[in-house]
Picture (tube, helix red, strand yellow):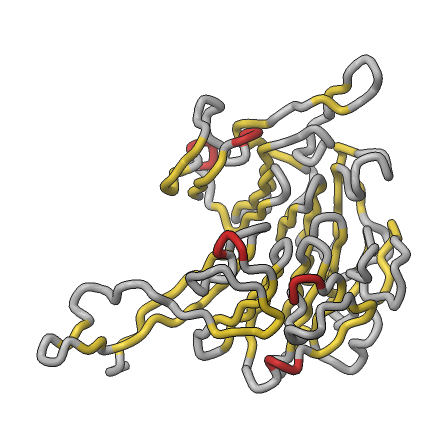
Length: 335
């Protein structure tokens, strides 16, 4: 496993004297295990290995790393960083990890969901550092976590949500928060294959490549068009992507990204800091295809006419709060 960026609160899992890493560096504490999946939250990280063992590191002031947080004489949380990855939820055999703003959620191999930390904005509910099973969920196959809301897709196709809901990100038709999972409305009869949760919005993907979005619409992060930036209380189909065969969706803090079956990327939402990847500051509710402007691999040019003999195709995407990542591979024209 490799990490890079800002090491504030030990988020990179490197020694505390490391402040910033401009290039990927291996997380030495995890060198002897095989990591299969990882997640980044507000200030903490989670990972799971091939044996189902979970690890946490980074900010822990709300118990989000699974360690009891320290408190001052007034009972207020005190910063207690976990700078080197260590085991969390040791009694659970984990399949997937997901990190929120100040809380953690894991899906176990038996289909149950467990959580700890501060699941709601600080001050709204007491934080916990010992994993607690989320009641009302059975046979879950996929989880997604936003800043302070959560999604769980069950094997029978039901999509459940719980947490904060001030912009309708739970898809329940209102803005009432709930600490217990409730069914999301408007998705009956659809077969869902992927879900994603951002800062204050959510998306779901069907087996027919259709994207549905709901929650906060500011900056056009839902992809309904430049003139429609209103919040949606229930899922609505992203018609501007209706002609594309989407296979993966990802939500950032204020933007979203969709990946097509033929390896193209569409992004939309807030555009400052370059998070949409267009090479210029642009904020748009219109999903636009992202150009992959990186040099072709060595030996991929036809030196007779200097034309590229192939193209880059994306295979996976991921959004952070203000940035986007994609894994791409080169496909030659003769394949």
